[in-house]
Image 1 (cartoon, rainbow, N blue to C red):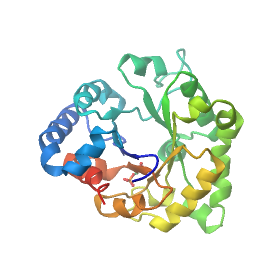
Image 2: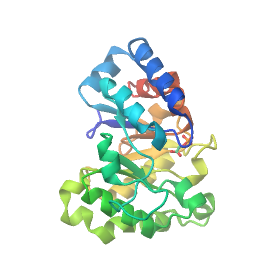
Image 3: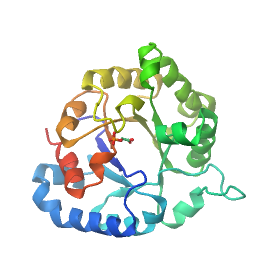
Length: 261
Ligand code: PGA
């Protein structure tokens, strides 16, 4: 047993519209009992194992309705730290709340790489959302080049500097319970080349040293049902942020089943 439990989140990115979302949850519901062992189902019922799906914004409402009976959390892929105003293209916390969403992913490397999101912007999102009572999954990770330069911990420290600036971990311990870190080395995302469990554990141990003992730390980057168990065996890896392997309901169930090692 892992001290903090296990959290498996599926990030759909810009995949699956409403129809595919309905299909996904229909298959998940139908295959739940046959593809999950009684041990896994029990872990799920006891909330030792938690699952989350992170669909595109337009699918949130439908996904929330369909996931609720299965006790799967639905999270948004991003959100503003502001509550309202002239911010075209942004979605606010109160809007998500209205749909029953209380968890948001922020700082994904694709937001940073393709849409220019900086540490400062991610900090604003984090601060606003935590202050509004949201659970936040904050993504951090180094590029291949940064790793080769031996700069992995320097880059991560800067990305985690956000937390230092907010003094979240020191001042507001209640917020700490609503914070999850996803360590996603950029070179492992969508490449089929995952970090080794030892490489990931080295970084997770370092992150835990920087933060509070009870913060959840997920590994992300080419996670599959095949390699997931080896990651979960590491003491500081509390779960996974799964991209490609979360799109197919049966493969996502296989990821949940992988926790029964
Ligand atoms: P991947 O994506 O599992 O497809 O590598 C992970 C992520 O970006 O969250």
